[in-house]
Image 1: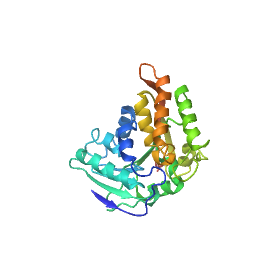
Image 2 (image 1 turned 30 degrees about the vertical axis):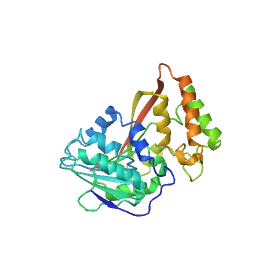
Image 3 (image 1 turned 120 degrees about the vertical axis):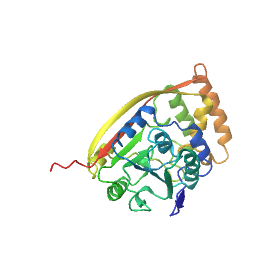
Image 4 (image 1 turned 90 degrees about the vertical axis):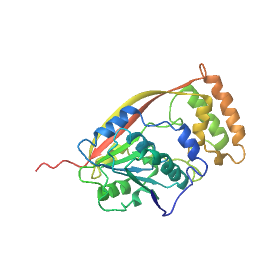
Length: 279
């Protein structure tokens, strides 16, 4: 695997978060993986481009299901995440190849012209990106038949339950009323729905696929998850992180039933394609 090194940005997740990300972040649901695999039907040696790869959850889920993947491009702005993605993906590659690209998603350029992606994925990261520029880049580099998949299921910050509401208030008591976005200030919601942004792009044929799921957290795993987030990573607490985690564990233990905290979520996949020719 090779690595290119343009400018990087660690303001959102900082250093030291990759291990927590790999251990505590929920993976891609099996039903969503099957949907992505089906989008590659008939492509003999597909190429995958995974934007905002984190610890390579998407390619790690896809490779066992689509072992004929010929090549995987991993793109992320965080060098620690990208190094972890490279290491975790390597044992699964078999005869496939992979390349890691350090930089913003919209700056991606394939290293070899024949490696045009057949599937472009972005899981739980599209909101951080220059989305119009990313979509223009995808149109430049992707194969004519390519599918673009934007996926996500919110976070424990957005999930509505008694225990997550109490956890949000605890985070706010330490970090202020707004949702933090790493060291860069407050998080700002995208102005336009992703469906509209996709519809205005070259990938204007959009279908939505929703997969309800239930997750079981423990107080310890929920607190571990927070270490991987932009809104509650340890570096934001200026020396009070141990105090915060102790408070969070006590708080969540009071809500856990049989040691379990329930999250009912919906994992949404937007599949987008270029319009099919009518000629």
